[in-house]
Image 1 (cartoon, rainbow, N blue to C red):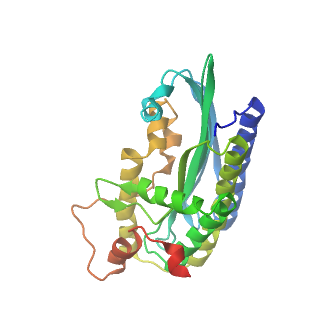
Image 2: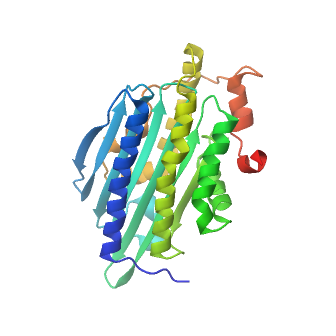
Image 3: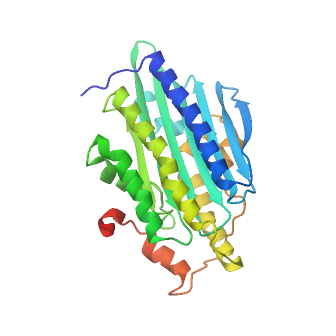
Length: 311
């Protein structure tokens, strides 16, 4: 079925939703942290467009976090966007989205990531090509089965109104996407990931984007509250920093959003705000057999059907 085309009003509605979502998430996370506030950094892109970066640092819970809104446009697509859609080369484009990463100080509180975005490529005498994408995923260091089940239950519930097959499909896509091929290991325990979504038509696809964007706080805030007061020591912190290195490797080597931002002349500080404040690399480090660190690698990171196991 051919997807219907968005009007200028529809595109404006997407932008309004995304800007409001950024504000709503920052307000909720700032309240949950209780010790720091988000700064705001408005910026302009020389090639067209701009955005607003919101950053929180050295909080009671959040060591570093960023929630960025961007709306950029240009006359031609960067290679990262046209590589898998060569028919779009040479088109003008608009790309807008909200992207966030939260890096808590406590290693027992997982890192979280979410992204929702809209893209449209246009060319004279040709129909616009548009799609939605996004999702959210969780990167624990000392993982809890309860947290993993909760995270995936919220993801499933967000997808449920759109069909029983949606959560399993986008859950599997997340497992496959957030995977470090050069390490042969997952970045975290997954969640949802989708891209190139337009087959449902504009209105229904936009509705799904909102469902995913709205679900992030429902998924993450209860985990913060459960784990924020767990005691930890230097060994826990060192392992967190070691695993953060994997996070950096994925973002700089594999992540399409990071590559798109850099190749399209985006604002480097805003693109790289997702990187953690402290990271550790050690040569061929291996966890002690039977340790909690080994349990993360062996039990939690391999893709699992968390909800089937919870029933």
